[in-house]
View 1 (cartoon, rainbow, N blue to C red):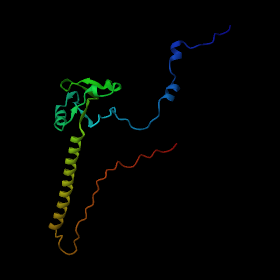
View 2: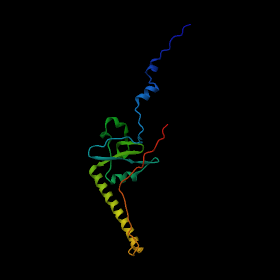
View 3: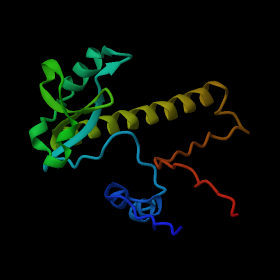
View 4: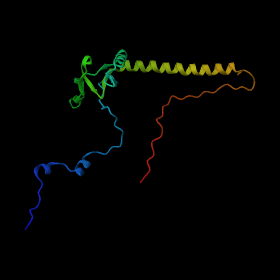
Length: 169
């Protein structure tokens, strides 16, 4: 008795195979993070703000952000492809949000102003630490022979460390 050759059904023929899926997905080893990337509007800076902690509204964090000039980004300001991120957040309105976070924005001028204020505060702190160090040196008899003035070196560069080395197979 001859066997009839097996032909795939229409649903089986249309179903992608594991190999075809693997070939169509680009391989990337870069860390993606949990929050989607949304391009900021021209003239605005933006960041994600936490609005919930353990299921409770984080009003303090929301109002602190608003006090600094941040406001929720309306959902109609993003491309249609990102509208799935829109949600009604009660008194915040229909905004962009995910993972208990809301996308907030503010004018670039306000952002630059805050950056300048923080840079000035850092500079004042560094100056105060240096002054305190020299005062301690003076109080310990730093003006007597044999004592050298303290040398304080600091850098403002931030480093993330060296990349992780992966052993070859």
